[in-house]
Length: 405
Image 1 (cartoon, one colour):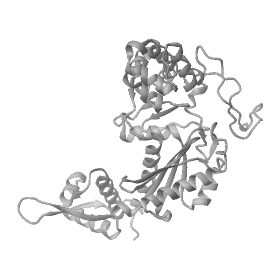
Image 2 (tube, one colour):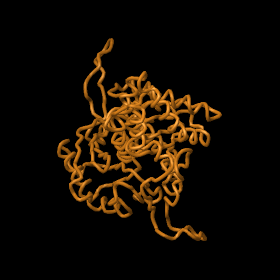
Image 3 (cartoon, one colour):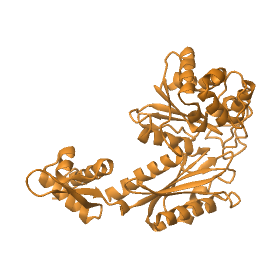
Image 4 (cartoon, one colour):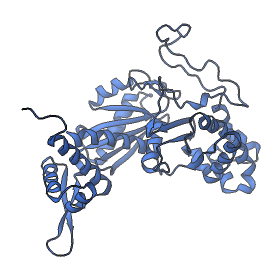
């Protein structure tokens, strides 16, 4: 009689995956420690480790002295069992990182956009340079995840629109997969920043939170129940177009093909979003923030410099921060009233520059406008949060593939 699903083979697979995830998170560990964390007997743990060694996924990396008897072998995941690449794409260049299956970053490089904006050439050059720096063959990259600004269709995974990356459009995903001959995933950059915050940052203990991206552009990512909310067309989080007090309405900003039975939306089969002439982004974008700072006597050359200067000297910059916090609070309040995430994380260079002085002012302003008052926190991700999120997403996918094979 044939065996039924959910029998010893399935249990072995579940135990193997649990042990591998444990070793990635806490390793190296002894057989006894693996058994203690997973609840497996010594015999079962030994059989499990033998299987994983045979598959080339774990190896002995040392010994741990105990009491009586021989030292216990320490096991760890084999780092080069697989590699992944993560990329952060912007108008000023492409940053690529390569990490092994344990999450250790082997190389990170930045390539200037010197290929006329051609996304395939830019990404190809960045991946090749990063792989070469990491001494990893391209064929060993299990998956690549690319973070890009703009709208990514959640159904096709393709870029629909990226305002300051005009060459990134529908068809790019297929072209990249054909060129690299590897699995490629494209994700909105702010969504990847939220994944990084959930895995490594201030939102580690939170299933529900919103991340407000304040940089050269404005964006929002929402995670509920541990899941990113992308929306039907991938436009969830394009908060720059939110109508707010003190700014013109962002009229005529989106065009798409009509759905079945829908009339009157016929100009384009994809998003066609012009530069923001109104809405939330016109109040809290970098140019608007710099202009506001200059009116308050804060004279930094860039918005980031102005915000950092004000946060470092609240006696002189407090009035500017107060007004900026009120502007930012319009968007945060809208999200809070609709979704009540409990936590809002400030990210991006402007959010990081404002730090706690800005976060505290936003929290108070939202509390005055909203029936509930979320915690407003500052990102705890060092370096490039989009790249960090891209590598994390790539590792999650690679581990599913490699550990479950």
